[in-house]
Length: 314
Length: 314
Image (tube, rainbow over all chains, first blue to last red; front, top):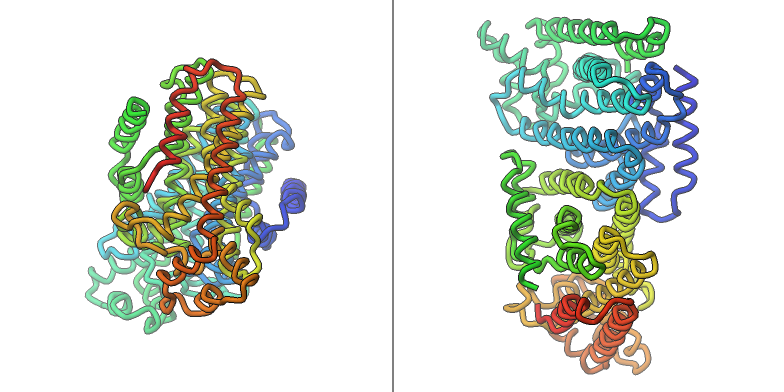
């Protein structure tokens, strides 16, 4: 994993160094240089190698995907009013909202610049970029709704999070000249892995260690986000006649007791439901990877990436 | 002019009709359907014909430029906290800020989708799209500075406004297969015309008829925008020892008397300075158009477009 990460980090470093010294560009470099796992660009490089290409061949597009991801972070943090990103101030807090809007816009332009070389890559990226926006729209809509189903929630995180990992892998595959079937299989691997990753993220938000996650525990719960966990918990409550979660949700954000909400979800079995769902998604991701007609040694890197993501504590 | 506008309007209408019925897309259709002059896409079609292409050949890219322009309007209106756009509520007022951010992002993605067909067009568009963001950044910076020069102001409006008209014309020229020299000349025409247009816009803000412009008079002045007019006015004041403008600028926005500010700029000669600058830019635009080696009949449409823009009252 480290060699891929080193490639990405060096490319990001070089890219940031060449940015003009205007205020428009400083937030880009700031956000890109915060510690990050670089899962998506690493996945793009690995997929390129999986199908016989060289990692370096996909480096521009891998960077493009990481820029796009950072654009979504910059704008989503405004929309979600998040003060911190992994323990550091978000761009709209460190600068201001207008700067975060505009610098994010410019970052989106920059990402398109890097995704433009190949027509098939372009078409794929355009489609998924739009789906990511649709996912964020659903996410915001869900905050105002009380009738969101678990299925709707999964579709929202598929769009908001999973498709970009899927896109990264497919882009790597396209650059290596993979068949259409193989591109779809590696895409499926990414989508299922991305869903598992995000569902685990919701679990970490509610039950993770803030020292390890770098985020305050229960941020989503306090914000009234209808996570899969919460939706499941509310379903269980309707069945057993208790009302800890629904009472808490009825309160203003500042009044909510996120510790009690977490306890209730554990007692109701929502936590174990979510953990079971994560396992099923991970299993389906591995099946998709296994179905690709390339020898297993070539798959080792992606296997390792998936295992790391699945075992992650932050 | 009307046949070009009809082509564009029909293309926009068809594009809006095919949008999914989600909240993400409704603000795009709303903003795109507000009455607009469609100067940039019309210019793209005209430039394509000027160099021997068919207007229809450039219709996708013309739409792409109009989408990009509308993306900038949606986000700039948030940043400038503008409640109205040509008399109608802005997207962030009609919906909310988050919707305007996200729908604008998706509109930017959509514009790239349409600009992707040709490598040269793509490269040009990427470059100018970034310059437009740089221009908006300067514009915001200028609101906090007291030492902006007239030269800096012109460079800001060049980036924020003029380059997109220049880009539209160059894209039309590229699609028609114009030479590099001719592409640069038509680009220069657009840039000078765009600067003239924007400077006239500042004049209209300060001295135009709100019934015709659809905007409250003096909106820029009240917001403390360092327009070319205001910068010139302050320079004149420093020379003659009066202080109407600098006293007004020192007040809070709600306390400013924009009528008095307008009178002062007229008395100081700033208004006539701006009008002279507009004339010089228009002259230079026509020179660039004249220098293109195509017979005059072919230039008639762009001549007419320029004349309409120059004579406009709104």
